[in-house]
Image 1 (tube, helix red, strand yellow):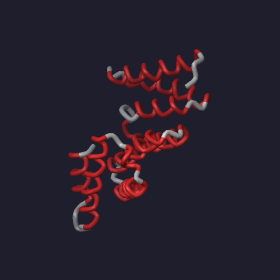
Image 2 (cartoon, rainbow, N blue to C red):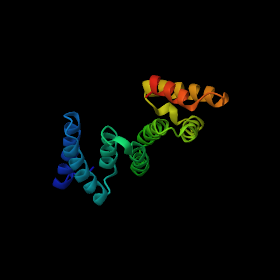
Image 3 (cartoon, rainbow, N blue to C red):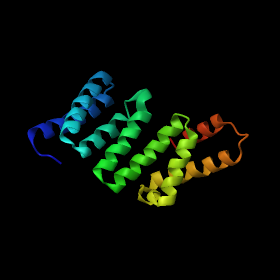
Length: 158
């Protein structure tokens, strides 16, 4: 974590973007977010990139899947296994929101096979297993509508 004045200013802008988002000042939140992300990209500050992208998920609207993909890349650069696991789980959730059930299924299976799911917090781990169980049921019963699957997952997990 950089300690120079530009780094502190960028981190402040990231916090301001979250505050503006909570106050429903979306354009201002996006402006602060973009300024913080620009610094993070220039300085290769992956921790700040990760934090910015995590907060952007709350106000990115239709770009949530793209933001989740960027979050996974930032977590990989950060070399923090907890952050990488969390970001991959978020990506699976966003794929479900985007109705990419096959992609979400493989992300979840990959996390299960590698043991990454053990690094999730307790409530996230519970949601992870609920998503797996519902996914198994609906993928084993192809006559079921994917919209039913999406509705069930969205109702209990997202």
